[in-house]
Image (cartoon, rainbow, N blue to C red):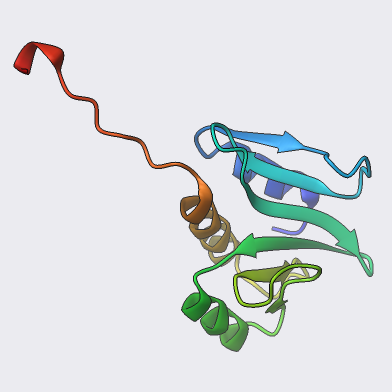
Length: 120
């Protein structure tokens, strides 16, 4: 995974997600969860590479930074709760998708179990 389009397509494949451009700058694509409108991925080009900021559990954030040199404390975000993934080809697509999915799961509302009304 190396392009903005690939990241956007993957994010949109997750449930109840939409693409936003709140900064009025086409370089910054924000992926949000419907319902609470929270951000789980920010996609932008910097230094000729696509970068993706994702929310992380603090322990996992440190883990990912230790495994891949292309994962760093997030650019322009809280360095404890966000990482930046640089899409320079050094990280397997499955791992990038995993980090994005984990970010999504941290911020998107959980589905509430619906109770069958006929059962009380």
